[in-house]
Length: 589
Image: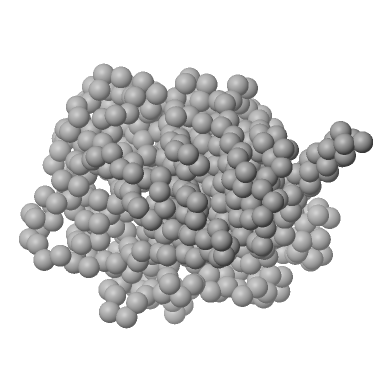
C-alpha cells in the first residue's frame, strides 16, 4: 500500500517544518474509507528527506537509501549503494551516498516513479499528487488531453503537471550532488531469438518461472493473497507455487466480480473457485456490484486512488470496498498475475497500436475532427516506440507492450491498489522476461508457449470463457452515471478548461441505457467470421473505429475532476507553508 516521496535540497537543507509537511502529505494520500491507516515512515536529515505513506512491510531502509517492493534474487544483494547492483524484482529504488542520488525503476516499470528537478530541489515519488503537495504548485499539462481522449491514460510520456516527468522502464536517474546535474540511463528492451528447439525454449521458460516462484517462499502467506481468475496467468502462479514450494496451508486465493457471476459456469468467478478447491487452497469471493454510496463518492475515490492515470472504472464500482476489506483484515498485499508472455495476433502497425492501447486521436472517426476543433495539441508516438529497422511486427508488438503498456496502464492499475495494499508481479521478473525476449515470434503469439506449460500442469478444471466483472460501457450508460458526467462536463469549470462549445459536442454522443445497437446481429456475425487480417485492412481503408460516447464522456470527466483535485492539492500545500512561516515568525517575535 506504500507510496513514497524522496527529496534532496541543494543548498539550504530542509527546515524544521519539513517533517510535519511530509506527514501532512502522507495523511492526504490515505483513502477516506480507511478508518485506521497503518503508520507512515518519515525521515528528515540535513539535505535529505523522505516519507512512506502507510508502510505495510515492503519497505527496506539502509541509511538514507530505501527500497519499496520485492526482490526475486536467489541470494542477498547489496541494493543500497548507487551504481552497484540493479536487482531483479518489482520495486522503486532510491539510494544515496555522499556524491550522488540514484533512482531506479524495475525492468518494466511495475511501480511508476515520477520526478521533479529544479535549481533548488530534487523530488522523486511514486505519486504525482505527493510531488504537487510537497511543492505547493500545479501547472496543468494540456498535452495529456488528446492521450486521455484516445487511450484513457496519460499516454507514453506525460504527467498531469508540466514539470513532473516519468522515469522510463528499466532505467536509473543519477543526480550528482556537487554539480546538481541529472542524467538518465536506460537499458534497451531487445527481442533477440536464441536458437533452441521448442522443447529447449519450454524448459528454459519453465525453469525461469520456477526460480522466481521459489523466491516467494519467504512470504508470510497469512498476510498475502493470490487473486485468482479462471484464465492462465494466476492459475500458472498457483500451480508453480504448488510445484516449487508446495501450496501452503494458509495460502488464500480471492476472486471478485458481480455477485451473480460466481454461479455462472465457465465464468471467471465460478472456475476460480473450482480451481482453488482442486489445489486444496482457501478461496473467498468479493462482490464488485455498484456501491450503495453516492456515485460521486465512488468516482471521486477511484480518481483519488488512481490519480486519474487510467479510465478502467468497471472493477472499482464497489467504491474500493474489496481493498478496504482486505486492508482491514490485515492483508499486506496481493500476488498478481500481470504478465508479458506475448500479445494477440496482429497484421499491421495500426493493429499493434490498437492491441497495446496506443491509439491516436486521428485513428478514431469521432476524435479526429473533435481534437482539431477543441484540443489542437500535437500528438505523436514517441520515436523510441516506433518499429525499429529489422524488427519483426510481433517483436515490436511485444516490446511496446513491455515498454509502454506495462508502465502506462498496468502500473496505473497497480497504483490504485497501492492506496490499500502492496502488490508483487512475479511473472514480470527480469529472469522470466529475459527468456520471453529470446523466444521466436510463434511461441509468443497469444502466450502460446506459456499456455502450453500451464495446460500440461493441471487437468480437470476448465478455463473460463467469461469475465466476472461488468462491461464498463454498460456501467457508464446507467442514468446516474450519465447525469453525473453531464453535470461536470456542463460546468463553468469545464468551459474554462475546454471552451464554451466543447460540452455540447461531448454530451451529444452520450447514450442512456442499451439502445440496441450492440445486439448480436448479422453485422456482428459476419465480423466474427472474418480473419483478423481482413478486418485490419477494412479498418485501415474503409471503416475507422469510434470511441464510445459514454467512455469519451468519462475520460473528459476525469480530466476536469483531476484538474480540480490537483489544483486543490497545490493550494492546500501552499496554505500549509504559509501557516508554517507565520508560526515561525510568531515564535521569533
